[in-house]
Amino acid sequence: MSREEIRGALVQRLGSWNSGQEMAKSLGISRAAVWKQVQLLRAEGYEIDASRRGYRLVSLPDVISTDLINAGLETKFVGRTVIYRPSVTSTNSEAGRIATSAENGTVVVAEVQTAGRGRMERSWHSPKGGIWMSVILKPKIPPALASRVNMASAVAAARALAGLYGLDVRIKWPNDLLVSGKKVCGILTEIGAEIDSLDYAVVGIGINANIDPSRLPEEWGATSISGLLGREVSRTELVQKVLEEMERAYEEVESSFDLVYVAWKRRSATVGQRVRIITRGGEFEGRAEALEADGALVVRRDDGPFERVLAGDCIHLRPIIEKVEE
Image 1 (cartoon, rainbow, N blue to C red):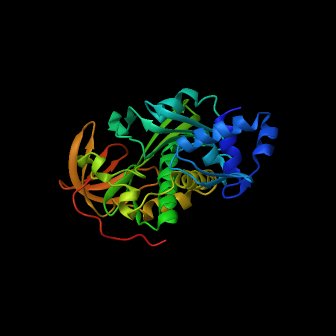
Image 2: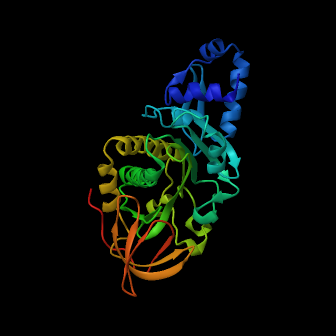
Image 3: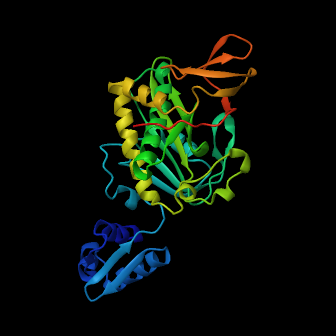
């Protein structure tokens, strides 16, 4: 018997009374053992009432757990297997190690990343209070179309944040989500593929949820959901919403990619902006003109020609002012 079993029983009947005697009987333990586990849960921040009627979970603390994510998750396969770790170097690294054998939709989530990674091997600040997770996906598409997974993931995370909190979420090419021009989420997609088949995609999603914006590196130009709303949010609810939107977008990738592509373009924070593009081959400035279906950003360079950029960093050189209309 573990604390997770007691927690799971209480979470399933959040706000309702659970008989201590019936819990003990169903779990094959003594009522004293149930009491001990309840005390440990209280020490973790769970508000649990006790009376002659038994135990009642009053509210959920701001913690991430498999039980809490699974309770009420409305998906068919994304998030049906959740692997939780209090601390990891990187959820993408953890997910990558098991991706070949893992079920489609498996999620690795952690309270803290000690060596979180962004694009081009940059470090990603990942303190407690954020959402740091990776989703293993196995779409039936060729490797040449792998960029669609990254597009779909950005659209899914944007839909989740807009749907839950009414935020005007924009996508900065290639993989950042912005609100009022400030970064709230980053996405890193890594794939395993053969010449003609995509074995898996590991989609790392980092969301600055309940983090004091002053704790974030100033050079990021970042903020947090709690900073924007002036209150903390339920990270469990946000994880669930992102996973539900991930499944929706995943299915669109396989059946009707135009829906994802149109949503991705409509939410663009980059098209129309003056930008500086930095690639491994050098850098240049110009005006972002279009986004193409293969994920490329088309830029009219200041020195004249158009250039399609498939990979690189993009710095906006003027503020974002337009609002997305759903």
